[in-house]
Length: 225
Image (spheres, rainbow, N blue to C red):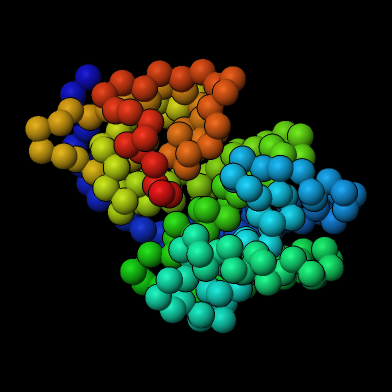
């Protein structure tokens, strides 16, 4: 198969808002009816429970809404401090902040014309998958948001300089081109489904998945380090 002709993906500034609102409408009703004890279940994020992941998500989104984007925002130390600050909050307050963030952060991300905050919107959607998986719910890293998440992944993977890869996705045609070309290196190839592709690029567990990856190693494709 010939090498794909590389064209930098064009950023759609509306995608983050669409993704966040779609996830809000799908996730919040589930969370509102989940018993409080289940929020203490562990997630794929080392050391974090469901409640702590949701606290992190709400805090990160509200940073964007309120324009608190000082140096160090979204780094592990800052994220840990945000979660610790919310440890004594009632669960309802954590969920209310998260819902507000899902609703209001998208337009703020849209206004950032450099697109650097797009990766945050994608990350929040991935964390929703972490929560679903921990709760034993179907649809981790898939669902209605897929149609917005995949093009956001294409843009983010290029910005993060991951190797150029052509993804042949189950039920999706034509192949999706991710990453950025490197001189002297052939395009990598992925064959599998979208949730597995998301898992690889975001460092989520791959136990039980089936895929073929040629010309690249999983660790090279990580967009969050």
